[in-house]
Image 1: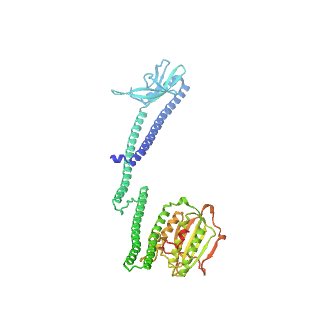
Image 2: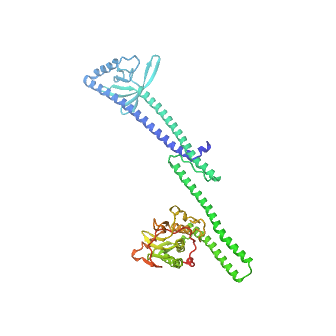
Image 3: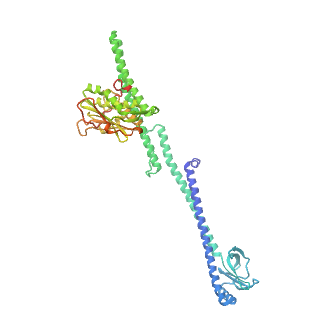
Length: 507
């Protein structure tokens, strides 16, 4: 119970109950006062009607006629001596001696305003005498004669008592229901919170399969549970991805390290030879460079995801960057017997990091050239609305639709043997760079339905505010190799190495 009373749910229920109780009591008080006023108004209207009737008699028959009328009304009721009806009459002389009526003497009246008085009357029931409250109006007739017409308030008091009793029980029942409802609401809220706490405790103790149960009501707690479950699913996926990344790193680093060690061991075993030593050292340096390339790629991705270099950003020309990268990869395409074409706008001003943008475009081109056995690769950079769009299309085998999201993850490569040069970090870096620059990257087919559908990687980044949008008329088309091939529409295969040709890091 101590825990129950210390919960926010109980305090919230207590606040709402206080407001509810205050509202109910105020409503019941208003009902009581309105009803009591209505009863008094009816009593006053009845007395006024009696007075108007007696006034007519007085005007027609004078004082004697008024006395006769009052006497007739009193005797006509056939009351038991000493018992009073609800209507009271009394007419007196100037000395307040009774002339007619059902009151034995002039009562001790108390002024209540506007000509109305209140006074007590006694009613005898055998040996029992009951004192009642009465309300009356007093009129002074010519000659200082006094006329009192009133009603005892016995029925009104009984009605008030009944109303008070009824409203009192209604208040108690309502407040009791409010307390019970508040307690039930509090326990219901605590039960849902306890479900979250129990699930969290089990997860803390290592059971990552636990999920917060849903009640199916679709309320805020269900929405919270859905969000928590989605978060737990994401964490579980990240942990699984971390395990996969660790396994892939172990696989990708074990082979080159084993080759490096074997090469050095063989060199030491063989007959000393200066030329052989030099060749072994060159191969060792190349292997070390590939290892360093993997770690540099990981650091670049981490740097892009952290956004640690945003303070040094400036407005750069993405068209110029794309042109430089295309020129750098032109010899690579020629060496493989491929056609590299480019269609780049005159200027595409964006705000960002020149080095990271260069590396992202280089990775896309490297991917396309690596996985295109024949045909060509097209690089297109244009302004589309408020965005600068860079497209790298190839005529290769393409990527299955169901794998197009997965290839952006680290160390993901489509070929299981992992024999193709690269480390599976190229597209991961491209995605990190696009997210850092508030852009997007996606993959789509070049030639749907073809044997080799080809792939196109699309990198889209918002244009700098001051640059506006590029003018289509200022686009420049460069053919780096002939003949020209149409713009393709699909992204390159995942798994390209992030190491650009020598010199790109200086771009």
